[in-house]
Length: 324
Image (cartoon, rainbow, N blue to C red; front, side):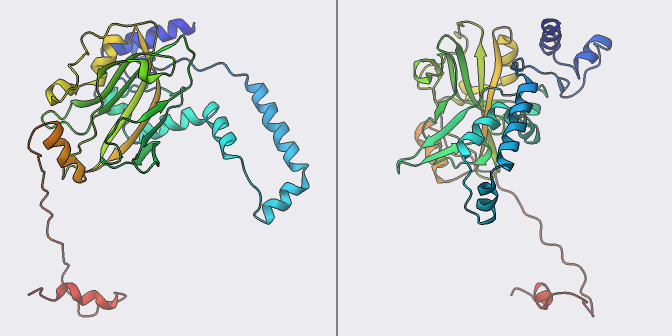
């Protein structure tokens, strides 16, 4: 029965997507914008015995309440919590669902998968190594400058040695000519286990280049689990790839092409905004003039002055004083 449901979901997505599997069965001609909303294209939820999890949690709570020293440490603010263990438990239980909800909030699935979504059951650890020795992490929507993300990041995840993966980094907000297209910043296929360096680099890494005046851009990392070794001849670019036309990309078309051979499994993304390093990326790497978008801010609206401005601050009259 589970296999049949998965077949329905994938068939609905292959045909352009529908509101849900039920819509696919009862009204196959009902299409709309982001019509794939509600379609789950991800991995099957890992089998966990909820009874065992509940019993373990109940036992941990009972054990904690029986230890009077924990209550005393909490009152005196000396209680130390092992955050690494908390993170591990979170990633195994509610973490993937929280990440999916955050991605929905940021419009990741709407703009990249036409509304279809998935639960990222494979946690991704992404960080940019700096010359100072520090690491700038990528979580879910945090801010990373283009200067900090100039070099390819370190990406790690837990996987068996006999598994194969594809890693994609794309920007759905930065295309200069087509608002519906993306720029591919990185694509590696046939990654054995979690050894990124041994995968096939189809498109080499390119630093983000959010154009001045266009606000914040989302840089999205998507990890796909392959069902077997794949041939990516159509995606292979001449390296290094400095052509924006060659990097023009649509994740939706990419997934529809290979959806029978791979499944989305991991997700991470950050936001980036223009800084001085973007100019160097355009001039030294892309070999083109840097475009700049300017915004004409409307003049501040000033309401008619009142004779008795009740409950107004003392500097209320400053905006009525001529600047010259």
